[in-house]
Length: 425
Image (cartoon, rainbow, N blue to C red):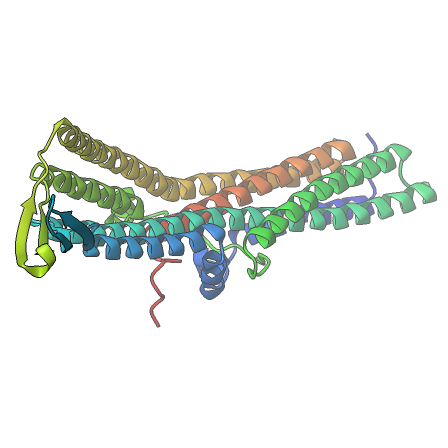
């Protein structure tokens, strides 16, 4: 096979060398962490607070506080009774008579204190529910943000490849015109340029969709921007320590605990209804046109029936269900924490493996270049090797972003970032 001209070998060396340059971008600087890829915290807080579900959670807290006041005041109110009558004695006199009464049902046996405890726990539950909603919204934002980062990195890589493919196509066209290269090389260069352009268009479409989702859902957030990727930080961290960080302060678990506590308090309150509340009344009567006056107190107590027992049994069943739900959530949270911690640690090793594969693919592409310069392979074979090296690089960058996202997820779940509490200054 005839040796290829030196100009072609030099150009191909430049094209293949771009793989090595992008590998350096994938490795990036050793400084920084996944936090350097995230938007400013104040803007994140504003974007989260503006979400409809978070605004609704604020109203949920207002509702719980209003219900707390209702429980503290009690459901019973004073009732004023007044009456007027006329007494007629057959064959005798007629007398005007009046009656006035004031009555109210009273909570006893500590029921008022139990209602206050239920109201306070309802407020605590609403507060925890809002914190959990905030955290879940932060998880979605984090995932959407890294989707934008992935597509941005992919677009940057394919734009670099398109620039190199254009340079290759122009050079091959010039040599074909001068008679120094075969037309087959031109067709191959054109095909490579078209393939890269198609990949770039697909990546740009995905990026546009990802950025549109971010701008639509989180108004005020900046567009993701990354020039280099930091190294993941959790490669040497133990899975158990990360799991414990997540479990130390978990809103989902706290929400289940608060719900179980509230159900228990309500069951206790319903059990107190075995002794019905009495109604106390004060009456004042004026009879026989004022000749007789009466002032008295009456006390009435309902007789408990089967309905009260059924309501008590239902409340006890709901409390038992809440405890079982709490146990289920505890298992789920522990499993989720273990998965998140394991992913954060193991994904670093996966990225390192992918990075090594990308370096091996680059070395193979260099060997293919030498073979091409020696006239042992065609341009098509060299371009195929280049594509394989590029695919390996994109896979390594994807694995690196996965590791960085897993790291950020652990920091978010451990409330090291974007916590609903105000940041410390």
